[in-house]
Image (cartoon, rainbow, N blue to C red; front, side):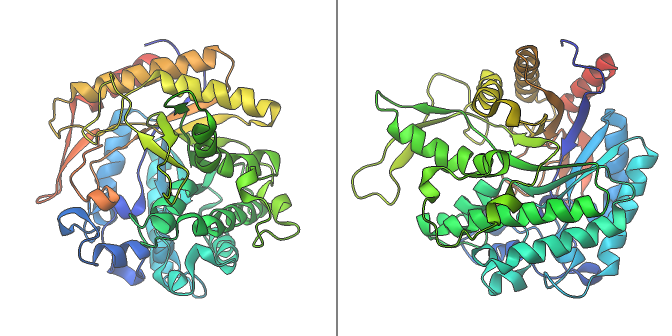
Length: 429
């Protein structure tokens, strides 16, 4: 493995609803994912996150796995309904205590905590009031950010506001395949704006509490046209990438948001509040063609042929990561801040001997090193994920973990990829 720059941050990522479980413990309120999971037909095999990896009770064991791996950072998410059960108003001290203990334990083992404030688990009470379709949710998010920063901000330098707002908007509000399960198609665009407004307000709240580094994390993809007409690919790029990058980096929306009545005077200034870095989650490129006449969207995705696939059926294209990062630098120039790869990983067949995952990570790290060699300022890389976990609408059918989890016994068993990455990190030191 080639050498990465000195001080490069090496980490793994998880998300609260995917690993914590304990959904009714110690005052936690219901989230939209609790509601979605318990609605028949929504999640594969009727799975729920009620127990997940039981991380809420087994966090100390998981911190030891992090320490044994040799990472220098751990990206986790804070469960908003654990901190504010109704999404606003009274704060649940027991919920904050959990993250307080976790942060202290990480620091004691030499692992920097990198909390994400929103990884899709909106308090159900806020969804009942309209969720991210309502402007008020952005202000409630900023209030929540201040609550969390007030408690752990003295020990946390690096913060992430939102995780993949495009996926939450598209899957949750446009297509209905994720919580809260709405099927609004292009009428879901207010969700994009209100998430970004919440991001900008949260950046300001975190700064007021002394945050040293604040970023947003977007799911980004190189978009490839399927055929001679580049138009559908350009529209998809605007919908998936630029809708969430242009506002925070340039203070403007792409044309698809032109004339939106929910964008008010002053909003763009808030959304474009300067960040210290940009989080990028990369899994694969996307190939796009024009949708059939009468389809609800003007584009549709098609398979990328001739490349390996993960157990999820996602194409494996390591050089897409280099292509993506170089493309971001070319598009945004000096407006592009330092970048962290905040998620990258794959699902495999679940075996402990996961050579496919090792090949995947090796290829993507080499592509990342090539991007850095091309002049892209990348400061860190986080593998998705430390543990097998609840994979949203796919339930427990997909296994992304460096560590295997037996959900019946909650036994953790490091895979071959865990040992491989441990050795890679030792070599980087």
